[in-house]
Length: 340
Image 1 (cartoon, rainbow, N blue to C red):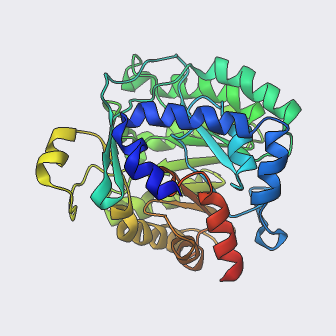
Image 2: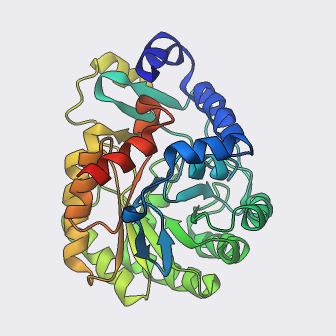
C-alpha cells in the first residue's frame, strides 16, 4: 500500500514536513507495546549477524546519518529491523541549518537533493538522549556522526570536532567524522590529506576506545580516495564510510527545470549507484581485509545491498529509498538477503 500512499498523499506534502511526520510515527513504533509487535514482524534473521568494530550487528543493513539527526527515532528504527542507526550529523554548537525549503524530491530518479546544513540541537543535547537510550535500549547499535559547527572557522575546526567527540564518544558504539557534506562552507576542504591527518589524530585521541571512522565524498578523484583510505589506516582509524552525497547532477532523467529549481545541495538516491560501487572498490582495495568499510549511496533493493557486500563492504547503509519504499524497507532488505 505504501507506493499508493506516497503517490496520492505524501508526495503532495513538503518533503521536510513529510519526513518529520514520518519520524513521529517511527517514534511511536519504538515504544511498547507497539515496539513488541513491530519487532515480531521485522526482526532480522540470526543468519544476517555481522561482527565488526568489536560489535555484533543483527543485520548488515543500517540507517545512514541524516535520517535521525537528533537521536529521537533510534528505538523505532531498530524495531523496524535496521541493524544499526547512525545518528547526526551533530555539531558542538546547536544550529538551525540552511533556510527552507532545503529538501527536494526528484521522483523520476528516486533521488533527493538536500541542503539541510547540519540542522541539529547540538552535541550536548544529543548526549543526554543517548544516555537515556543506553539505559533503555542497550543492545541497539548506535553510530554517531559529527561535523563542523557552521559558526566555527575552518582553521578552528579541529577543536570543534574534538568538543563533539568528547561529549559523544563515550555514548557511541562508533564515531564518524563527517568532512564531506557539500552544505557547510569549507567543510570538504578538510578532506585534503595534509589537513585531514591532524584532525583525525586529534579526534581519535578524544574518542578514547570508541571506534572512529571517517566519511568521505564521492566527488573526490580516485587518487584522493585511495590516499584518504591509506591515511585512515595509518592513523589507526577503525573504518571508512563511503560515501556522502554528490554535487554532480549527471545522468538525471528528472526534468531539468525541476532540478534547476531545487538549486544547490547534495544529491542522494538511485543515481549514485555506479559511483558508490566504484568508490567502495577503491577503498576496499586500499585497506586491510579486517578494516571496516561501510557502503552508502544508491542502495534500494536487497540485490543492491548484496552487491555492496560482494564488493567488499562490511556493512551497508541507506536513507533516501526510505522515502520511496516506506517503513517496511528494512524488513524487505533483510528478508531479501536471507533468500539470496
